[in-house]
Image (cartoon, rainbow, N blue to C red):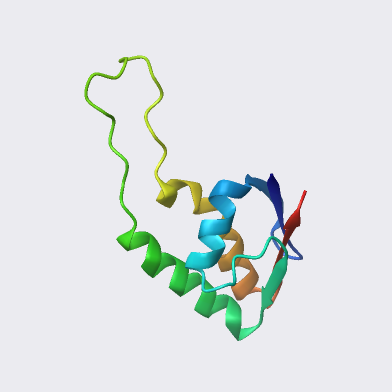
Length: 101
């Protein structure tokens, strides 16, 4: 499942649901596949997500894995497009919406 994030001031992007839904829950949202945040709630959601990401574990490569295998991608890195969208929307009094794609 894919989740499309949209903002009136920051465009749009698509994220895999297995990454997007935990990030939404970390933002303090219900984790539903469809929703929106605007106004003062944008700043609160962004700060809540940033705080939660600081506590999230960073994956490490497993011993014995093939050297050419791609290393795991940290949730902190996967959250960057969403964090940037939240920052831009908060700065320009915009909104962020998400829905299944």
